[in-house]
Image (tube, rainbow, N blue to C red; front, side, top):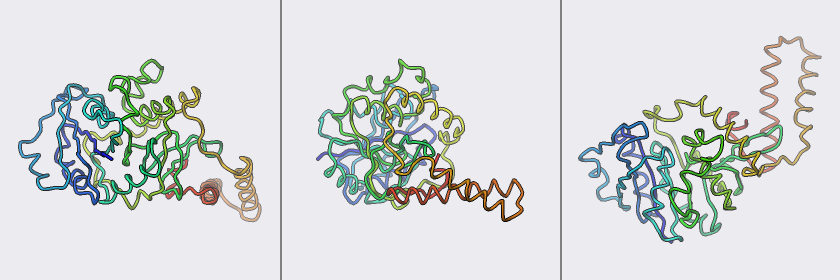
Length: 314
């Protein structure tokens, strides 16, 4: 099984990506090749200037790094799209990486093992499902079992089979005939996931703990999209609502309890707390959050999913 890596970056991040690239190139089960896609200019017209000694940083590592100069910058999806023109064998698997994420030396090995067990599926270390109230969205990460998801999270490694795609143009323009065209430009996870969903290709978050396999480099990377987090949250909501309405995201996460049990139990606890203790509205509000989080954790533990931050439950 041929397995190659794929990544892109921004002009200001050549120094930042050296260590993440080294971690990818010295995996215990090496990739056959690692591509770094470098457009000539960014979408904003900023030119890419590759440092003269950049490639010397990777001499002697098990996997060869190839710089693929691209005519066009497609935005964040450039970490995947250009490889469609380079790798033509439909049986080749493509693993995409973020340029500011350090990966454990066994990440590729673990992904290859899952590819053999679950072929012809888009595999990721994390994903998100659309669910039902009170779990409208559910982050699936650190899950105990492999879990189908609506969209994968590209921040952690994702594996695609080359046969999933036909042309670069078809992928990078998917959704451009919809009202969310501009939102999709910087939300490549949604563009790719919805593209795969339209072709009935399943997306699965595999059962490996991301805390043991990934960590982000200290400090915020220059020009990182995470700096626009509030705007991105709004865009996510718009995209998700559209794809749910169109039947692209199909509610792959469902709570096994009646949707009335959780809020009813929370209100019950608050009622008796307020009845027996004289508490200010502020303290009651804090208790509401605490009780809600505890109930969510207990519910998720019964269905084989885990969260380790309240942010993971929307």
